[in-house]
Length: 79
Image (cartoon, rainbow, N blue to C red; front, side):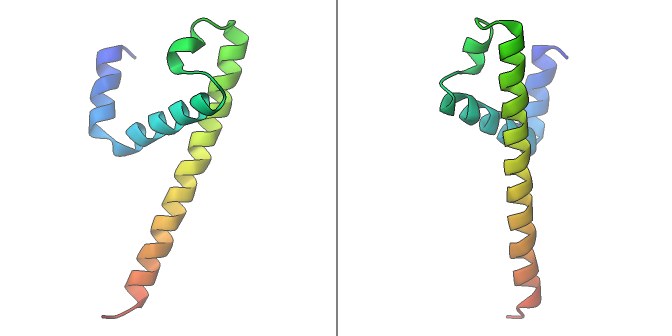
């Protein structure tokens, strides 16, 4: 996937934007950035991205579960 195609996908899918932000957040918490990954040995950069992706996936699942819960509350509470 080229950069232009990636940017187009980012603009059209809010989940991708959120996932990217969560990955960047994880890397910052670990003292890195996406830009700094290129300066690391490939294996370390890959491991950090695996961990960051897992972190982002778990956070997205948590957000989706909360949204579902709130929707359930609103649907079950007639106004």
